[in-house]
Length: 618
Image (cartoon, rainbow, N blue to C red; front, side):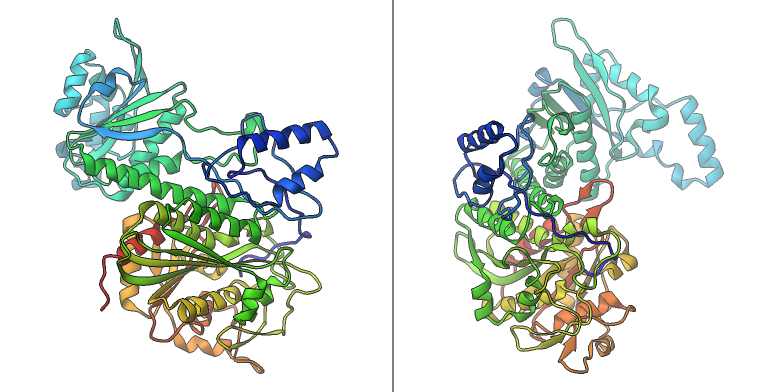
C-alpha cells in the first residue's frame, strides 16, 4: 500500500494459534502438552499450527478466559487464524408483551411530538429562550398507548424519568439518546431496570443510519447494565430496517479477544441471552429481517478479524484457509479453489509473483465461487480484494506507521467477509466470484527492487518505480483472471491502495473510480443503503502520461500529484475497455485509531452482489 511511510523491523516469525476447526479434545491436549513441557513447548505448537484442520464443527471457537495465547514458532509460519464469535444472545420480535415478565432490562422507545421539537423553525434567539424555559419547566411527556399502559402499571415512573432527565433527553428528541437506568421493584415480582430510548420526532421514517444509532445504544446499555440476561425493547409500529438494527446490534458487541488473556479479555454483554423486540407489526418478515442482519454481522465480524490479525498470525496460508472454511460452512453454495505458485506461474502471473518473491510464505491465489441453489443466474460478477497481509514498503521502505500495515489486507477482508455473508444469505440470480491474490510485501534477497520489469498475465510489462506501490501489481493479475479466465460481466475491486485517497476524502469515505455510469449508480445505491460511505472520484485519462515508462509498457506509479487517480488508471490497463469495472479505495475507512478494524466494505459488497441477482442481462 502506498500510504504513509514507516520504519521497519525484520519479519517477526509466526505464531502457532489453536483455532476454530480443531476439536475441544485437541485444544485441551495441546494446552496440556504445552503446560507439561513448560519452556520446551515449540514442537507441539508447530504441529498444531502448521496443519489445516477441516471439520464440521462451529467456525467460531474462542479461547477460554483462562487460556493463554500461544506464542509464534521459530521455524515455521502459522497457517490458521482463529475467528471471533458473535454474541450468543438471540434476537426476536413479537407483538405480545409477555416477555416483559421475564425481562431484567426494559428499554422503551419514545418519540417526541413535533410541537415539542420545532425550535429549529424559530430564529436562534427565540429558540434559545424556549429551550431554557422548557428546561426549567419541562412539558408533560406524551406516551404511546402501549408505553402509557406500562407507565400506569409502574405508577407513573416513566413520565417522572422523562421529566427529571429533560435537559439531556428532551423526551427522546435525539435518536439513540438514553436516560439513566432506573430500577423498579413491584411486590411479588423481580426488580427490573427501565431505560427510555430516544427515537426522534413522532411520525419520522427511520433510515438505516437511525437504526444503527438505536442498535448501538441498545447494545451499549446491554453491556453497561451488568447481570442482564433478558432484555425487552418496546418499539412503536413502523420501526423498519430491522435488518440494520440486528446487524448493528451484533456488530456493536464485537470484541476481539483472540490475543488477550485473563482479565484483559473484554466480554461484551456477558450475561445476555435474549433480546426481544415488542412491536405491533411483528411478523415472519420481521423475523427474517432480523436473521438477515445477523448474517451480515457475521460477515463484518470476519472482516474485522482479518484486518485486526497480526502478520505473525495471518499470512497468505492462513488467509487461504479462511477461504476454505467460508466454503465449508456455506451449505454447498460456495466452492473454494486455491491456486499455488505453480498454478500462478502457468497463468503467467508475473506481476503478482514478483511482489510475492519477498514473502516468507508462498503466494496463494484465492478463488471463491458462489452459485445460487436454484442454478438460475442473471449475472456473473467478480469481486477482487487486495490481499497484502503485511506491507513494509519493500526496498522503498516505509519510515513511519508500519505498525498499521497489517490492515493492507483490508480489501481482501471486505471481500471474504462479504463472501461469508453471501453464503449465509444465499441470494438468487447471481453468480459471484470472490478473488484475492494473497502475499506480503517484504524484503529479502529475492524481493523486487526499483527498476525491475515485471510481466503481467495479459502480457503488459511494468517497470517498478517504487516497491511501495505493490498492491496494484498483485491486483493486476487478479483483474486479468476475473476478466479473461472467469469471464465476469462486471468487476469491482476493493483495496487499501493509496494514502492520497485518505488525504482527499478523510478516514470515513471510500473513493470510487469507474468510467461506467451505471456501475457508479449501483455502487452509490449500495453505499446509501448500507452506510458504507463512498464518493465517485474523477478518472482523468490525461494523467496516464504519468505512467509512461522509458523501457516498459507502463510504470507502477506516477508523480506525487494525483496519486489516487493514477493508481486507478493503472488498474484499468488490466480489464477490457468495455467491461464495467470500478476501483474502490478503502484506505481511510477500513481502520479506526480508536477501535481498530471497522468492518468497512463487507456490507457494501454484499448489498451490491445481492442486487445483481435482480437484474436480467441487457
